[in-house]
Image (cartoon, rainbow, N blue to C red):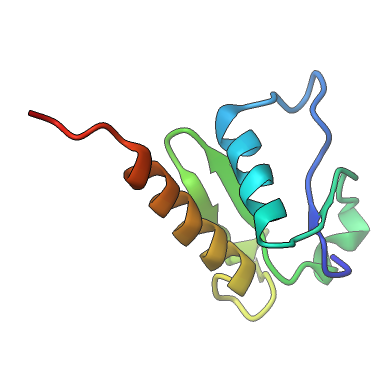
Length: 98
């Protein structure tokens, strides 16, 4: 919304996960502004992109919400960039087996 990456601040509703912390750092490297302001229900139609993060999902694009498309109904550019850089970061730092 407004060109920034919006996320709920960490509190009793949102845990400060490792994937979140890594993505915040990677977003900063990409010069993507992070705004820790909860998204209000009336702001949902303004979303150009939407994704979930987590240990098992990494960056999971959401192309619809409540039966309505988010943005143009496809994963957005920032989402794709974060997916790519997170994957590169994970696999470039992973230990190599025997």
